Image (cartoon, helix red, strand yellow):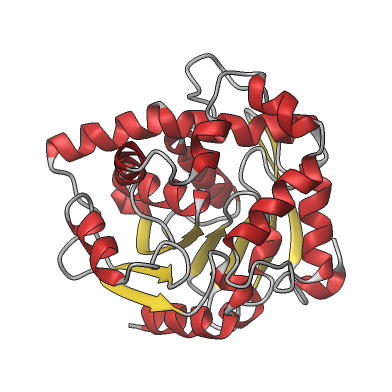
Amino acid sequence: MPADLFPGFTSHWIDLPDGRFFARAGGPEEAPPLVLLHGFPQTHACWHRIAPALARTHRVICLDLKGYGWSAAPKGDPAHDAYSKRQMGREVVAVMERMGHVRFGLVGHDRGARVGYRLALDEPGRIDRLALLDIVPTLSQWQKMDREPGAYPHWRFLAQPAPIPEQEIGKAPIPYYEDLLRLWTGNGTLDAFSPGALDLYRQSWNVPERIHASCEDYRAGAGPDRAADEADIAEGRRLAGPLLVLVADRFVGRDGLDPVRRAWTGTFAPQDTTFEIVASGHFVAEENPQATLAALERFLAA
């Protein structure tokens, strides 16, 4: 790990039933705990531009989710439950408990945000503040793709049965993932990513087990994650506690805040949810760290 990405942070390995998980922690140990969860196809390194600032007021834990970065990448199961956001949320709880935190704030981007809202629905007593970066609910995403078959094609590609996408990606893993990064940035380049962070992403992309894990992540999205959303909506369950939904004006928020607001308030978000939009491509913490940090600091201090 390049030392300059997380100055003052310490490295932690946490043993769980599915293997060892990696996290970096910084900030005063007595400060309110805050876990940061990255998305696809990245690692905890995506937070390096804002985590040190958040650590001035919080005990910040940047975790590699299962299958990503340096955390365990076990083989998936036929039902894809191992990579369901419910199971990954349980693992976040286990990591945080091992690090001494029973209740905590959570900021999640992309897949990490999906883990975050699933955890908050399943165990509302665990989360005191929840910030979700550049997503709509998983069920809403699939409904959009059903209406617009050409939208977000990587979701369907990665969710295909094994080993179809694994073999295709394995022919040239770095170009595949880098093409996605370029496509989802605001300017279509890799300029927003620091060399140190990009090196860590590339290391992860080159590991066959992690290619499989990312596919399992999306297979879970098509199966148990969607089913969990449907079940909770049928029961009328809502997220409790303060909620921030922050989206990028050149990705999830490209049509403005109204469609995002409808997707959330029509499913899980309470009426007092804070919705904000920032000028950025999908990778808000790296493309526009100043605006992302400002929004998070306002929310966490409220």
